[in-house]
Amino acid sequence: MYRFLLTPRWWGINLFVVLAIPFCVFMGTWQLGRFEDRVQSHEQAEKQPDPSTRAAKPLDELLPVDKVTSGRPAVATGTYADQFLVPGRLLDDRQGFYVLNMLRTDSGKALPVVRGWLPGSPSGARVPVAPEGEVTVTGDLQASENARSKGVDVRGGLPEGQIGMISAATLVNLVPYDVYDAWVTLPEAEAGGTGGAMKPVPAAAPEGSGLDLKAFQNLGYTGEWFVFAGFVLFMWFRLVRREAEAVRDIELGLVPEDPAADPTAADPATAEAREEPGDPAAPEGSEAPEAARKAPAAP
Image 1: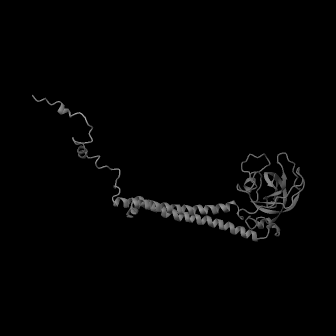
Image 2 (image 1 turned 30 degrees about the vertical axis):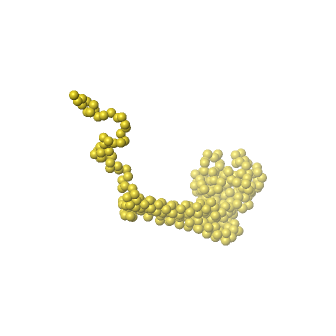
Image 3 (image 1 turned 180 degrees about the horizontal axis):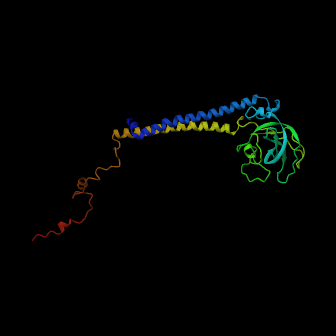
């Protein structure tokens, strides 16, 4: 009954099922592993002390920025150069902007330093002037922002002196010197500006260290891939059952092998046999054959 499984059509169906189910299981397991990694990173971050409470270290010793060094106090010495304003940044549910200055170090590279936050719009705002001369700053280390970072504006078209993303890739096109692939935020901002004293910008948690929406997306994708695997298996069993029932009906003679074929329709002899002169189905009072009407009458 199940010899149809060896036909070329079913070979293709079976091959698809054999490949699809392991692939779905693999993808579901991979997504589950991503979710477990995020949970583990979140638990480890909860056990670690607040990075800002740890001892400050020179900037070069904490680079590159990772989940361990993010938020650690970094020390750098240099002179302030170009200043940029970063609009569209929320602090305490208020709209405002960051005041960012480039700190040129002895290495020749510049470190972006967020000196503080001011409310309102940066257009026409009066911001405090950066300290002159050589300064030593201690700020919480942060990784360069990307398009997924909170508050980032990637639309472009900002006025001169404003940037939508704090990253080396953006700043290196605006200044004539190299830029560190990191930035720091001062824990104690300076006073001044039209909005009063600048407020310090708190350091953000490193990306991927918390149970954010992406973690639960991984969990949702896990369920979807396992559901796909079950659906493929269910449809295969359903197709096999329907095909087996059709083969059984043919073997029992319940249906012809080719139901669309009518053997009597193509046989002229069978069709003439159906039309006999004494066919009771012929209507009463019908006319005689043409030959009988033309026969001469008896004398």
